[in-house]
Amino acid sequence: MENTKTIAALTELLHITNDRIKGFESVEGKVWESYSDLKGEYDKMIFQSKIMKNEIINLITERGGNPDEEASSFAGKLHRTWIDLKNSIPKSNNDKETLENVVFGEKYAIEAYDNALKSGDLCNDSSKIIAEHLKQLRISYHQFNNIEHYKSKEG
Image 1: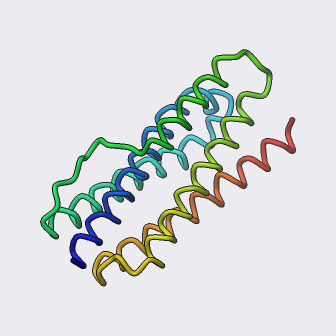
Image 2: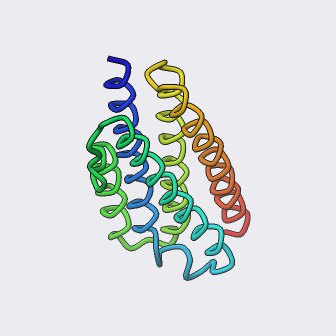
């Protein structure tokens, strides 16, 4: 039973990690054309997300699960659709709104990872890896939040 709970919790985190990757990819070209100096940090976050994804897939597989490597959550799909819709409307501060959406997504991921750790559904090995992921998510959140404040001071 514990294994089933662990696999279910990890599968949810895999979906959220896929949401992050797809969300980051949808930001491409929207903000970084104007702020190319930030692109390196952004690329690093995408790379880290892909490592996190692979680690979660390995954890699921090791526990006998069958991970859907490309699945994402309904909430993530809805959020990306909303962002795409908002970005299709010409405005002068799309960059700021895009960054706000990234910060919102990072906040959501932090909550999900934190809840998974607190739930008690993860085995010890999984908890250690997910705790490290949560640490990276918090760093990412603070970096994007700082970028958002940096941009708001400019405009």
